[in-house]
Length: 174
Image (cartoon, rainbow, N blue to C red; front, side, top):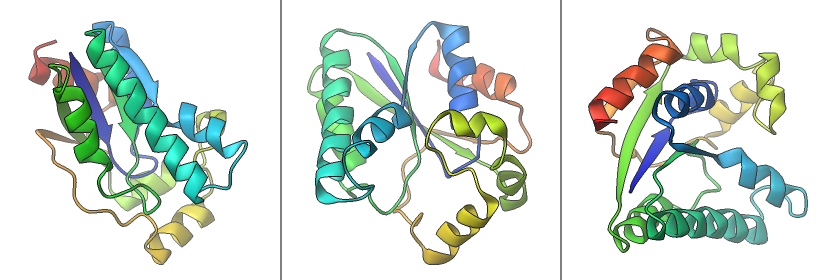
């Protein structure tokens, strides 16, 4: 079982690339906002119960997928409300059941993120979808997070989603 852990800041195309990768490979897609939006319906974003439930649900899903030998693509936007231990906990949960986590970083220059952030498709989930909010989050440091590992880094400002998905699939042997 592989957990393909796609990570990067807002508006770099994580969900778009993940969807293309899943269409190409047949892997399941576990978009982080499925949980974020569900928990946020009850608890304030970043509150202790929100953080516990969000990360607990993510980890429980990874564990069940690993136990079922079901490979999954997970999208993740590192930001200040996520426990610093979360990525390592994901590795431990998956590896405890014979799986492995494959960290893939997606990047894009700030001007590309800013051009994409207000796209109508970003309103489908509770994503950052305002240029002003994106800039305020950057300025406040709330998107600061320790660097995550990456066995492959793709600049989605230069590489379209379908090509990014092809490169990821090829790199992972899918």
